[in-house]
Image (cartoon, rainbow, N blue to C red; front, top):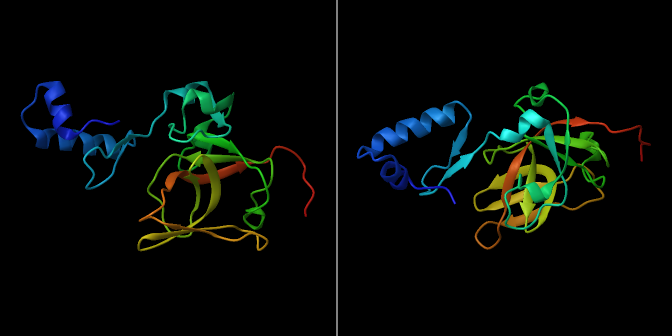
Length: 183
């Protein structure tokens, strides 16, 4: 659990909590953390030390665990994260054809930039319970609609007042893992 600003100030022996805010904003501007406005413990680390060893390829994501927990990592793929914009933090192997009309195919490796700050119409990795899904993101008030790019599939509707949704990141590219037949 991330610390509060007060806990950071106490831990560093500082009295001026405005100084803590300035440092946190500077870290956010450099891309090291993400700040969720209005949330007491709204600090999220963005940079991962594992990038120097290649991008982690994630398997099934356990409920409640951080997406980059070691138990979720199947292997590390030697690829430069900076090939993608914004920079990729991890890879997911695509299962299924719900995004085929967006040219995201079964068995592709999806490069993902870790962020919860996304906009309508972007392709995101979202977690609902212990399942991750790749869909177009659309938000209207307290509802989120995760839309497939294949008419054979139905959108997923989430009421944020009663259901939990975690946006794990933004799709920033794909790596095609082999020749595949068009279906």
